[in-house]
Amino acid sequence: MSFDFPNAPSEGTTFAPTGGPVYVYTGGVWRMQGSGQVVTAEARNRVVNPAMQISQEWGNTLLGPSTALATYVTDQWQGVSSTSPGQVSQQRVQVVTPNGSQNRIRMIVTTAKAALAAGDYLSLYQPVEGIRVADFRWGTANAKQVVLRFGFKGPAGTYTASIRNGVATRTYPVNFTISAGQANLDTEQVFVIPGDTAGTWVTDTASGLIVTINLAAGTSSQGVAGVWQAGNFTSTAAASNGLATLNNTFELFDVGLYLDPNATGTPPPWQMPDEAQELAACQRYFYAQVGSGWIPPYYNNFVGRGISARHPVVMRIAPAMTGTGAAAAGGTYGISASVEMVSYAATLNQPADGVSFSNIKANARM
View (cartoon, rainbow, N blue to C red):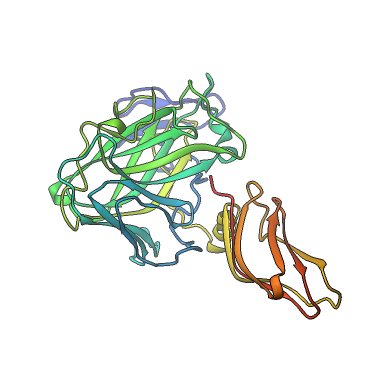
């Protein structure tokens, strides 16, 4: 059953939908009368790897410092920057969150930049596949509200979270402020995002939307807070320059994006994902293997040989395959893939030649 709660309720307002229980608005949330139960957004989190449990490519390796980050520091979470001469490093770290999760992403300013150029930016973001958010109905008259929540730790200042469509032509930025008393402490940020009735929002295997946490941005990336607008904006004019101070440290953790069809404005209780299930979700977009295949010798010259294997899961699209191989006496080899299978092929130029493949990576990221 779904229904719309009244807009702008006051303390004590009651709501009795047809066929449903009575709700009372108290303490800033709708509660089911007589139960004390808080009515929240739906429990399903649309973000992949929200607790940063999976980091197949880099583990806990320190990445950077760099003026131009473009690396998935953990699965599905990419740190990006264009900050010359400013520099930033990023890393997954094991620091327990207030919810009990074990991991978070950390960014540290290693070379400060006091004045940002128009095109400068520093962000963490995740593209979310269209089929994961198709029921948002964005881009239609039936667009539904969502709730965005995330854990954040950083210096005092004003920063911006935003949601954009997959092609970055529609944006909803929201500012959040870390007070002096909250500086460098774990905080939880919660925002209600109204459904966008305009723009193009895909519902297939392409990027459906982009969740971004922006830490610094020049004027080219600045939009208007709290409204849907045309354009590619990850910040606002009110946001602070997180790059301004050497050793500024930012941490992101426990991110959730939830459908809120009843307009409660309240996220569900945090649930840390099952790690095995989250690994499978991540491998739809990327996986890595140290040792992956061996084509044995074949006792005739110039013979083409091949083997095939299934990906760990069906991938989003046919992935780009990279890896290394070895074939003696000028033999050749190659790797190709569909959404379900990876194939290793070789031409062996002399008896007893064989080919081994290692350090295979399959990349179907958005």
